[in-house]
Length: 255
Image 1 (cartoon, helix red, strand yellow):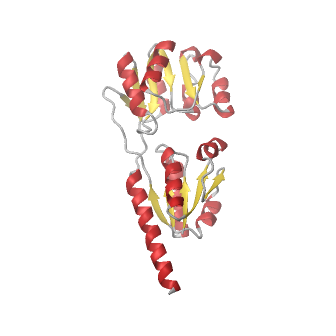
Image 2 (image 1 turned 30 degrees about the horizontal axis):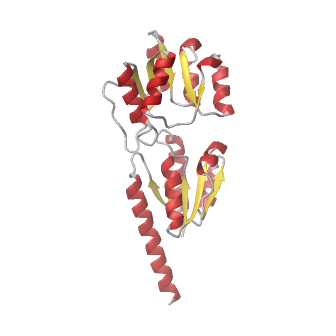
């Protein structure tokens, strides 16, 4: 039984490993070389790296029994394209979605530009933990105020360079991070505002919220896109049920 996982998250990697161990033929699709590094090499799992066109998605799904969308909660455009491809290929689609988190006292904005507009009217340093793609929304803010924490990749560092952010302000590290490290970063750079996405528990959101509360920094959250899906355990159990049913059917055909 072939299962295709559109990954890039911790849950996607773990799911691919467990489904391969359960006997499925698993293909994981990740968009970047960095995602491929994170996915690593897992017995029974084939990894495809790079963006896929709509036609390529459909061809990949043509002989699959099941597709799991384990992309990031904020990658709504990717999820929609995967869902559409599954419909065209007539393949069952399952959305693996991290539960959202709440943070007392957080300010929530619908987009990065809205958050930047609010920050423009205030003073104080800003710790940006939303990723390199959202940095451009802060183009009108004083670069000296910005403390971007981004992945240690050329793409991310180039995005910081394009905004003229001083090198001493750039933190290139791979998360998630502990509350203690977040708090230390806030204190080290004199941060007044922490801008983040609600990446859920695996994305380190609770630790950011805890650190902001401990240090007195204002937590600013970009609202999640509207979405629905199942948590990891339910997706895993559902996939294992499909694998078991497929094996029973196969055994029946050979008798």
